[in-house]
Image (cartoon, rainbow, N blue to C red; front, side, top):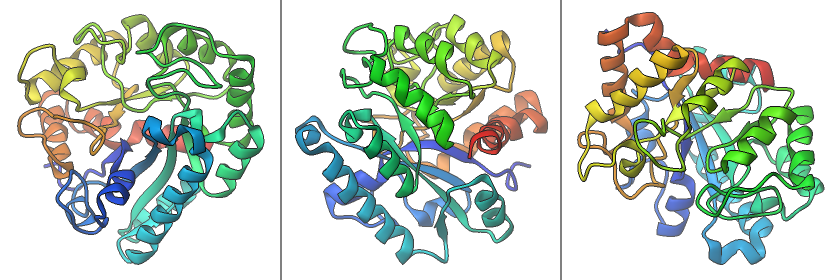
Length: 310
């Protein structure tokens, strides 16, 4: 029924976790490896995220992580290939190769420099989450406070638009979200954020934000971190579907995708503990809404973003 539906996942922290734990991308004991991805995910976004201890050397540490990423992709070139453009993704699908998008989670990496942002673009980065949980040169993380983007941050958004980099507002505070909404002349995304109405966390989007994101052609990726899925002690696929049902109800099915946050989360809903489990959610969407909606959420909505920006 859903076996042939391609899945795009817009956020994982697997590369950094592999590097820190001396594991490899092909087969490991964490949330994502290529062996489990082969029959589930056709496009994966690998984020470079830094613990706070690396902030004093953020640019160089990010470069070291990118070197590790390149080595792992090259070692497995028969299974996965780095992509810079949407055409690269289309080509890989035809050849049954997983597409790998490189992203940065947290603008600490550019150290207040548009030149370093440009350098990361040349290194293959095609998406940047503007903040993590803290305040940086660009803006303010949702768990830190609620402040507007800095002047530098506004220039970063404009520069990313110009270069063909996807702007990601997950982790960004509410005022920052609305600044991006005013400034960006391209659709932007919330790569791994859920509904705040369903689970009241500052990391999730309000109904108003979801509708505004839909109106500009943006997409949000469903996050599988338990604390962003439910306020209950335990949760499962039904709780994930509550977010999807609510978002479809208020904004339609053009705005939803996946940004599971695997290898960056401490817990996931029961039965959704690793990458191959994403197909269970696609199957449930198919049962409730049919093939067209299942394909939109699985990959077509983010394909639209890729085709417009990359």
